[in-house]
Image (cartoon, rainbow over the protein chains, first blue to last red):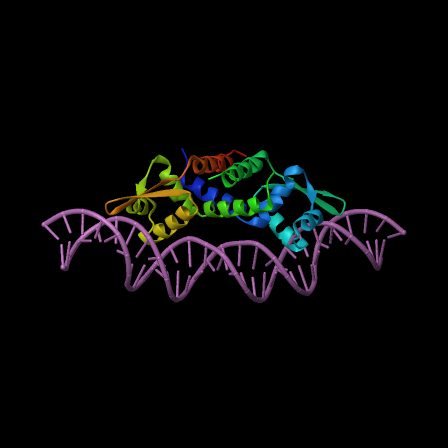
Length: 96
Length: 96
DNA sequence: TGAACACATGAACAGATATTCATATGTTCA
DNA sequence: TGAACATATGAATATCTGTTCATGTGTTCA
């Protein structure tokens, strides 16, 4: 069914989600695409820090990028990203 | 809907899943509870390393522990754990 | 009670990683 | 073309974290 390799890939995937900056960036994109400076401002992060994290998210194919003039617009790469985060949020917000 | 705090908690949750040792331990428990030495042997990890990771998993309430004589049996704490991993595996094993 | 077994834990070390700072690249427009 | 803007990127640093090693705690049984 699932190979040992799958589990390593899975750990790598969760590692990407396991950083509050990246999760907050991804969550920002839930409502649609955004450019880098808007993400920076809305999250109170420097442009550089956001850009570094976006690169990681893009390399992992969790976000997609599109240029429009001077701006780069980022969006969620696919619906799985939303599903995984939603599933996690359900667990986290569960009443004990 | 979701607070800023939820996102930090979520990152913490994914951080736990974001390590191959822990994911492999959790996955081992998919078929039912196991004791520490069996987990160690099946994963080729030292007893100490497994024990350290189990402590983290227990603190995060992802596994439950039960003593039986000299042995400690660990099991998945709830079904969310399985769901979150399954969801991730779907993403990882998706054909491009 | 004491030896043998199962597991937990603290300290130390090595490797990984997120941010900052400085600067480079790419784009528009006058 | 050159200034202004948006974004990317490399290097350096500080912090975090997983494993190992040594040892402690808890349990059984003769």
